[in-house]
Image: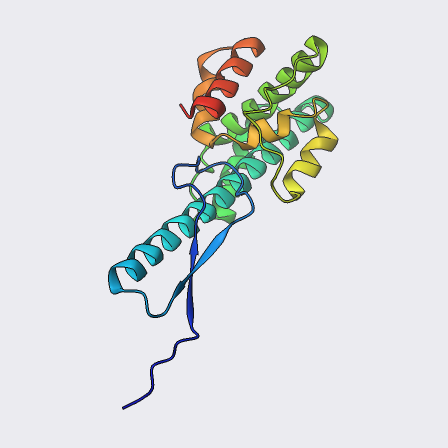
Length: 200
């Protein structure tokens, strides 16, 4: 009969379960469950570990998606301003992107127009926040995350220091719902802040 191994450990993540899916993960505090733990404890620990791993993966995907949509919107706006792109060129761009990535959802013409609007709205909001000298409440945005290439790139383009992080705290569906509901930068800011703070 083989000897029982007593040195193996199961790592369980103890970060809060109800943290927002779109927020960057904080530094993880882990506890070790001895291999001699009963089955129920091991199952509970592994279930929590899997759920939190999925949570972090979804948060990473959301940040990638937001940054991609912001970049596509930026290119379209800048091309419209500098190269006089009209609607027909944007329609062609959307079609060519769909042909290049036929398995990728979200590249329809209406979504590409939303990406353009996303960049435009954030640029207007940035100007409004900078002029108004407003800052986002510190309890909405956490600074304990690891440095992000998204934030460093956005910070070079966006003047208001806290807007990139606020932007990344919300999902794409949050953003589209907010910027299609109102044209007011003050209302955009209010709904973005409240969505991040209250997890609307």
